[in-house]
Image (cartoon, rainbow, N blue to C red):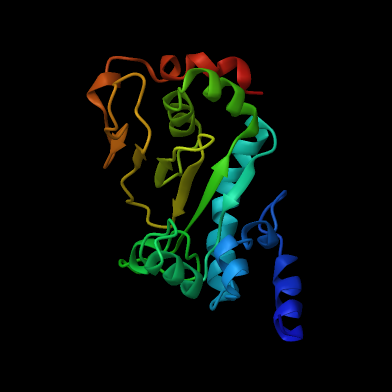
Amino acid sequence: MTKYLFNELERIGRIQLSEHFFLRDFLYSEIAIANHISNLPDNLDTAVEAGSQLCEQLLEPMQKSWGRIHIRSGYRSSAVNEFGNKNKLNCASNNSNFGAHIWDIPDKNNVIGASACVVIPKFLPYFNKTGDWASLAWWLHENLPNYADICFFNSNAAFNIRWSKNPNVKQNIKSFLINPDTNNKEALVKNNVIHDKYLNISPLVRFTNIENLVS
């Protein structure tokens, strides 16, 4: 690592995005470290704007209710994401990640956004015992109205959650896990439309199993 790169990482890592989150929290990348690729934003102001909204609108209220949350993955430079995609390292294409994990480049509609992959430690014992990720998904849906997309993964009930500046964004919740309520992997929410299984269940009842876990 050059001294310039070290100084830049140190400088931008100190940028505060919200009350409890700094840009440094989102810059760690196994792909970048293992392959000596810079994970510095090309457009810092855009990255800070999008990342600040992600933190303020979604991560801060989540942490207020659940206690400390763990950031699995946050910002990716275009170079890091492209390398991850080409080498099948669990990264979607750059075009798919503009306005998502690539915070500093707008999406195809020229709208900025930001994603983070999150684990909630307080939720893990319940999830490991029951496999019920859907209750958390519905809690997020009801309590974080400004999310754009949520996607759950196989390990530790980790999930991507995205904020978008698009005021007309259509919300989606999907998962790579089988839903214990439906016994399939169909989306809970697709383009703002709720899965038929849940239409006659009140919003609060959808996540009643985890109410005692939330502050």
